[in-house]
Amino acid sequence: MIRITKREAKSLFYAGKSIALVACKMRVGKPWYPECHISSQRYLDEVREDDNAWDLMYNNWAYYNTSNEQGYYAHYYKDS
Figure 1 (cartoon, helix red, strand yellow):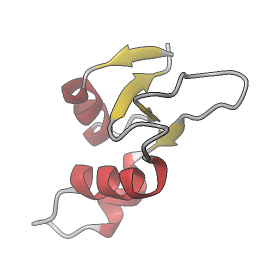
Figure 2 (cartoon, rainbow, N blue to C red):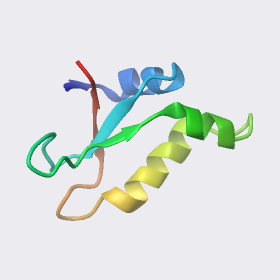
Figure 3 (cartoon, rainbow, N blue to C red):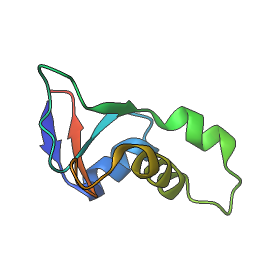
C-alpha cells in the first residue's frame, strides 16, 4: 500500500476508487490489519445533492476508529 495525501484520497474517493484509512498511530498491515477500506459507492448513493459525501464518510470512520491510543486523525493509503 502507498501512502497518499488527503487531497489525493478525496479525488480517488469521488472517482469511485477504493482507499484505505488508518488511525495515525497505527501501522498498515500485519499482524492485525487495522486499515479500513472505503468505497464511495455507498456514500454517494445515500447523500443528497447538498451534502458532502467525503465529510459523512470521514465522520463515520472517525467516530468508530479513533481514540487516544490509536490517534485522532487518519492516514490515507491506496493499493499499489
